[in-house]
Length: 117
Image 1: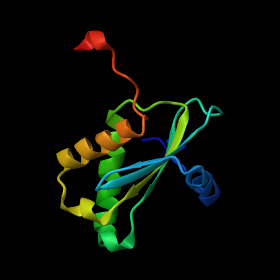
Image 2 (image 1 turned 180 degrees about the horizontal axis):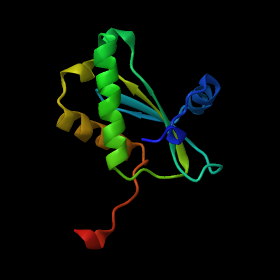
Image 3 (image 1 turned 30 degrees about the vertical axis):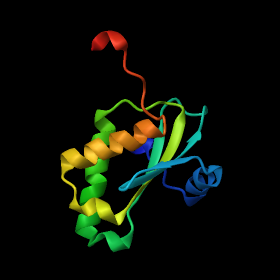
Protein backbone atom coordinates (compact mmCIF):
# COMPACT_ATOMS: atom_id res chain seq x y z
CA UNK A 1 0.00 0.00 0.00
CA UNK A 2 1.39 3.37 -0.99
CA UNK A 3 2.36 5.77 1.76
CA UNK A 4 0.00 8.43 0.40
CA UNK A 5 -2.86 6.32 1.81
CA UNK A 6 -1.52 6.45 5.37
CA UNK A 7 -2.18 8.98 8.10
CA UNK A 8 0.92 9.63 10.20
CA UNK A 9 0.30 12.91 12.01
CA UNK A 10 -1.21 12.64 15.47
CA UNK A 11 -3.24 15.82 14.81
CA UNK A 12 -5.01 14.07 11.92
CA UNK A 13 -5.75 11.04 14.09
CA UNK A 14 -7.13 13.29 16.84
CA UNK A 15 -9.52 14.90 14.32
CA UNK A 16 -10.86 11.46 13.43
CA UNK A 17 -11.25 10.47 17.09
CA UNK A 18 -13.02 13.75 17.99
CA UNK A 19 -15.72 12.99 15.40
CA UNK A 20 -16.72 9.92 17.50
CA UNK A 21 -18.17 8.11 14.51
CA UNK A 22 -17.16 4.51 15.18
CA UNK A 23 -17.98 0.87 14.61
CA UNK A 24 -16.53 -2.09 16.47
CA UNK A 25 -16.56 -5.80 16.99
CA UNK A 26 -14.63 -8.14 19.28
CA UNK A 27 -11.40 -7.66 17.32
CA UNK A 28 -11.32 -4.14 15.80
CA UNK A 29 -12.54 -0.59 16.42
CA UNK A 30 -12.84 1.76 13.44
CA UNK A 31 -13.28 5.51 13.70
CA UNK A 32 -14.10 7.37 10.51
CA UNK A 33 -14.52 10.92 9.26
CA UNK A 34 -15.67 12.17 5.89
CA UNK A 35 -12.99 13.98 3.90
CA UNK A 36 -13.69 15.34 0.42
CA UNK A 37 -10.31 17.05 0.05
CA UNK A 38 -8.54 13.85 -1.00
CA UNK A 39 -9.29 11.83 -4.11
CA UNK A 40 -8.57 8.60 -2.19
CA UNK A 41 -9.08 7.22 1.30
CA UNK A 42 -6.48 7.52 4.06
CA UNK A 43 -6.09 5.35 7.11
CA UNK A 44 -4.07 4.89 10.27
CA UNK A 45 -3.44 1.75 12.29
CA UNK A 46 -2.84 1.27 15.99
CA UNK A 47 -1.80 -1.93 17.75
CA UNK A 48 -1.39 -1.73 21.55
CA UNK A 49 1.79 -2.96 23.26
CA UNK A 50 -0.32 -5.47 25.20
CA UNK A 51 -0.86 -7.27 21.88
CA UNK A 52 2.60 -8.85 21.98
CA UNK A 53 6.15 -8.32 20.87
CA UNK A 54 7.13 -5.89 18.10
CA UNK A 55 7.33 -8.81 15.67
CA UNK A 56 3.72 -9.80 16.39
CA UNK A 57 2.50 -6.20 16.18
CA UNK A 58 4.22 -5.69 12.82
CA UNK A 59 2.79 -8.98 11.54
CA UNK A 60 -0.81 -7.95 12.29
CA UNK A 61 -0.19 -4.55 10.67
CA UNK A 62 1.11 -6.24 7.50
CA UNK A 63 -1.93 -8.51 7.42
CA UNK A 64 -4.37 -5.62 7.84
CA UNK A 65 -2.63 -3.64 5.08
CA UNK A 66 -2.93 -6.70 2.80
CA UNK A 67 -6.68 -6.91 3.48
CA UNK A 68 -7.18 -3.19 2.83
CA UNK A 69 -5.21 -3.48 -0.41
CA UNK A 70 -7.47 -6.30 -1.63
CA UNK A 71 -10.85 -4.61 -1.03
CA UNK A 72 -12.67 -1.56 -2.37
CA UNK A 73 -12.89 1.23 0.22
CA UNK A 74 -14.87 4.43 -0.32
CA UNK A 75 -12.60 7.25 -1.45
CA UNK A 76 -14.03 10.15 0.54
CA UNK A 77 -13.24 8.87 4.05
CA UNK A 78 -10.33 8.87 6.46
CA UNK A 79 -10.39 6.12 9.06
CA UNK A 80 -8.44 4.88 12.06
CA UNK A 81 -8.25 1.17 12.90
CA UNK A 82 -7.51 0.07 16.46
CA UNK A 83 -6.62 -3.59 16.88
CA UNK A 84 -7.80 -5.25 20.07
CA UNK A 85 -5.62 -7.76 21.92
CA UNK A 86 -8.07 -10.63 21.22
CA UNK A 87 -7.03 -10.53 17.56
CA UNK A 88 -3.76 -12.40 18.17
CA UNK A 89 -5.56 -15.77 18.12
CA UNK A 90 -6.94 -15.30 14.58
CA UNK A 91 -5.66 -16.69 11.30
CA UNK A 92 -5.27 -14.48 8.22
CA UNK A 93 -8.64 -15.62 6.80
CA UNK A 94 -10.39 -14.83 10.09
CA UNK A 95 -8.70 -11.43 10.29
CA UNK A 96 -9.86 -10.68 6.74
CA UNK A 97 -13.44 -11.78 7.50
CA UNK A 98 -13.69 -9.79 10.75
CA UNK A 99 -12.08 -6.67 9.30
CA UNK A 100 -14.37 -6.69 6.26
CA UNK A 101 -17.32 -7.21 8.60
CA UNK A 102 -16.47 -4.15 10.73
CA UNK A 103 -15.62 -2.03 7.64
CA UNK A 104 -19.01 -2.94 6.21
CA UNK A 105 -20.67 -2.09 9.54
CA UNK A 106 -19.04 1.35 9.43
CA UNK A 107 -20.19 1.81 5.79
CA UNK A 108 -16.68 2.22 4.42
CA UNK A 109 -16.89 -0.45 1.71
CA UNK A 110 -18.08 0.39 -1.78
CA UNK A 111 -21.35 -1.30 -2.72
CA UNK A 112 -20.91 -4.23 -5.10
CA UNK A 113 -23.04 -4.29 -8.25
CA UNK A 114 -26.03 -6.61 -7.95
CA UNK A 115 -25.42 -7.83 -11.52
CA UNK A 116 -22.06 -9.40 -10.62
CA UNK A 117 -23.74 -12.11 -8.50
